[in-house]
Amino acid sequence: MKVRIYGGGREELGAIRYEVEWITVKPAANHKECLDPDVDTDTYVEYFPDKDAAMKRGQEVYDTTQLCWGVVMVRKEIVDWFVEEDRIAEWRDAGDEDEISATNHYTDYLAAHTSPSPHSPSRKSN
Image (cartoon, rainbow, N blue to C red; front, top):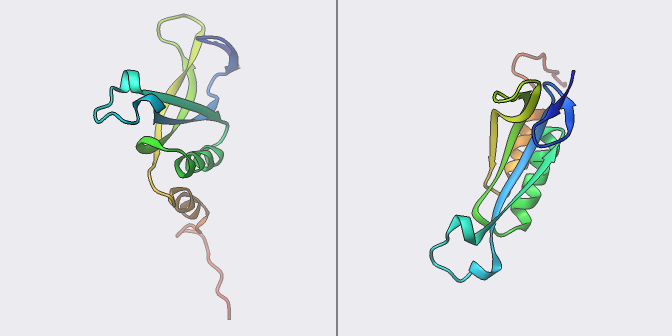
């Protein structure tokens, strides 16, 4: 069922997307010893329809961007009913969150998701 999204747009109830978020230090604040996160940083967010694409983008950002705290977050979001308004939905955090904080995190993620299951039959070569 298509629903109206709080803040604009329409989407299927239960739709899933992945948010990639990272924070950088503003150039004018690079020299500061103590940063004020509200004034001295910029937050960037991009959305992807599947986790693999989001994780790949997160790793690209990690590898090419000077990050404020050295981490890129990838979060699963789902369209669910907005509690404060009838017949309006919103994108909500679905609780699935990954932190990219190493240069090989995406490679490790792929390896974990493409390895054979311990419960699936394996082939033996002679």
